View (cartoon, rainbow, N blue to C red):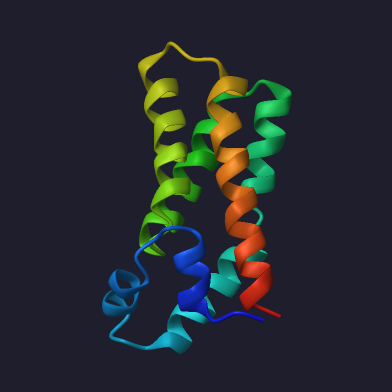
Length: 117
């Protein structure tokens, strides 16, 4: 097991910023990360991309983006934001936009598996 701070460090994210947003309460960070880990939005995004549904992919990516930015998971949030912006702009390749999300999500999931039972 690693600490939540170590997980953020492993992800090159700013744990102190998240901690300060949650009034310095590490138990809240852990609570919300556990909720994130158990959330099914990423699976919904994956299904939408596989089905070629831009509307559903946009909805899922937008939700995932919000969760990520609130939790200080900026790399994953930015990848989601890129998909959202491209789909809204009308010119996109869902698979190409999804690829970095898949990579970043795998990193986050692996780090969370190390700090959350």
